[in-house]
Length: 208
Image (tube, rainbow, N blue to C red; front, side):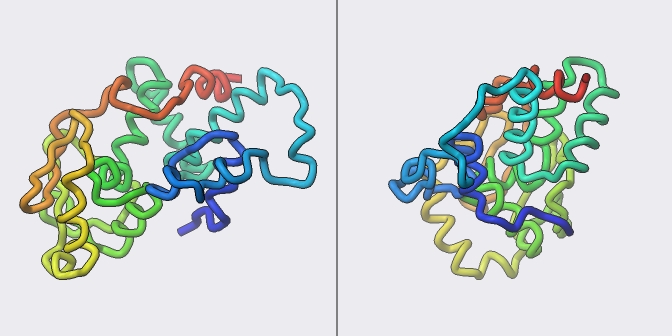
């Protein structure tokens, strides 16, 4: 499966803002944006004024980086969003939020979406009681996300069950702290998405 393999901190520097791609590290002085606030590249300090098209492209790329999807995947999500009734930008973000790896992250099972994707791909989690190892699976209202019996014995799980009490879960999800089983109470709404994303700019980029 194709995926981004370079240093993700470069993406934050490229956007000149924290995209929370490294979990807890983003809150420490080790954060690349804190240490090196300029974009990567030899001539990063010489930045020209960005055109309207450039602003739209930048916002689209930011959405891609945050959710960890490739260009072809992003195009498919937008096409799916335009086929549904409602605001395409909001529907696009809802589809991305419904990805299994994102839900695992939102439940607090991982510190970042990248780590959540790894947990899913390694087969540690279940969806409605069945093994699920595809990060892009779209969850539905009423779905439950749990852990495989063999994964409960791992050191990661034992550490997680102690630390997860300090994490918060969005209102469209619920979490059983005893069994670390999550449930989808409803589909995410635009107000549930914390990321500072201008979905209008993303729609404008694809509309041209």
